[in-house]
Image 1 (spheres, rainbow, N blue to C red):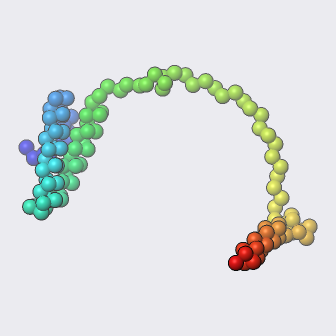
Image 2: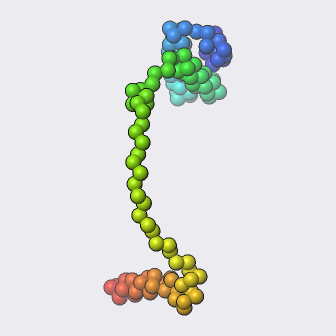
Image 3: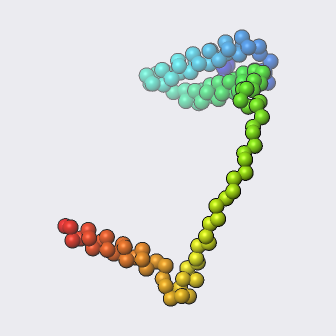
Length: 124
């Protein structure tokens, strides 16, 4: 049987032992092919890719065949959070409102930036 061409429908019919055996066969074949590619004996990149995909499908089928087990923490009811009062926040003034009063909101920030730049120049 070609390991890289095992259909999923056929995998679903396998028992646990056969799935485990098939997984080990695929893993052994992958190691062998990787060593061949590494030692430049052969180039089987398409076959390696196919085996990796088959292995992924096999692991998915294995996982889906297991019975679902839920952890105890997931089955416990989640207590409701108590309501906490929210602190009131003050609304920020829009730039249009500050310009209307004749004040530029970015002026203090620009002044601080120019002061720090002049201090850096004077230290040199």
